[in-house]
Length: 186
Image (cartoon, rainbow, N blue to C red):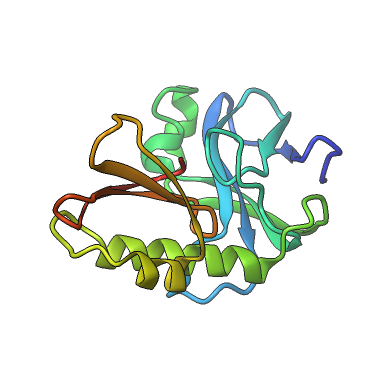
């Protein structure tokens, strides 16, 4: 169930010998295979017949970029090769995957699925097209990625161009008029 903190509370009941490790996740319902994944997962240890835990609805470990509002599949999966490795030796007798899922609706962030998909498309474009030595064209970049905030941490010809629409920074050598590298975030 969704919590007011922006997390989702899972309550898992199992008859497997515990402790075992499982993967707990939230996946946007109906995503096409070629789309960038929208969701969150984390490894959890089930400590008894009933275990409750929370999964963050942030799309990364820094707890930023919350998942967009929408319909999700909340799933818990046990994978035999690693799920029982560090747990109860009796669980090593389980040779098949075990999955449990439920549908939930997240309505906490106000972020739309369309805006997150656009964000992912922009990031993908940067990763596929900008690399060291590519000619820098500020007008073209702002046309594709939106306006940027420019800073010069070293005070020289090298400047950081942060594009909020993609949440990426492109590092540019303005003397050579070429891209040096890019990174996620500021």
